[in-house]
Length: 450
Image 1 (spheres, rainbow, N blue to C red):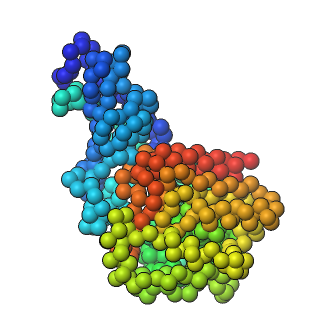
Image 2: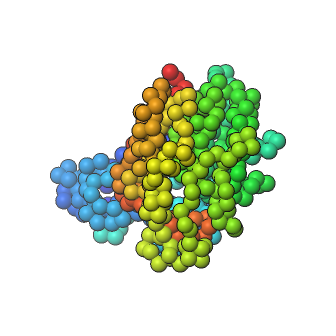
């Protein structure tokens, strides 16, 4: 390895810890450079589809010849300023890093602006330091997604479908979490393995667009989730069960907490709404209620007038970050009648409630909707802890730390094939991500350990 420097000390690059659970803060440091020397630090990840993702920043060595990303600003690159996680969140695909990457993608993860990787295998990210175009030091960071000792097993029991993350050690009773997807359907893989790695059993329960389940969120019976909770008590020995979901899954989380309170000891609703939405079928459009219970529709807000799929696609492609649904959504929901007759009765819940929203949510106004839920709980004298965490510089996508956020202001919806605006900024969403993870950990510690 050539130094590329005028000093006698060999340059080195270190990541501490070099292997850790993905949301763990990673300290990236370099030393052995000439004071004032310009050094390029870069990262690279090759995903399972063979796409290379890269990030880089330009730094100046301090008087001791050192660079520490916790206090050294990047002057140029895929991120600028002081950002300890910049080499992780600002990764972008090569050779195309604009939104055409999502539109032309064939893998679901790429459509969402994420590397196509096995959701439970470690991420291997190569770091390098270079001077004048010559690499002088390298190291590797391994971000684990699933702790040792957890079995990941498909669930096909009766009509239940999903995936369970179950600890092999059954000598103690563990908290159990039901994790739910949003409008993309299928099994929830983003949060579930990491939540399991905290020591909990997790059932990622699919409820539509998966195997032989319904293809759309239309008249989904809450009895299905009752069966899921019963399965968790029977198969996992769960004494306390929490539920969490994002977007339509966040809405569903509040619905379950309100209508099945004896099953839900705690709830995390991520970018939710204060009211249930109308059903949505990608083939037929708006179609009745999303949820039913005991043969009755769960009250839902009247849907906003929706353009045709063709018009949505045209507008999504013409706008820089896709079609923003929030203005029309808020206009339809911001009526006293909707608040009084269609709002989810979250005050019926019997456990701690955490809502996480993005202040710049362009999919729907989740910050506003979560405030309405919080005010309703205050007005009803809710007897359990509740919190609304509103994330700055964040939109509809609320990532966990060290997640790629390059494309987070928009997504290409995997079922609708429409380019939709999400809001927020890549750097801002990444900065707020630690708030999300810390709040989730504190919530589950409260639910399961007090």
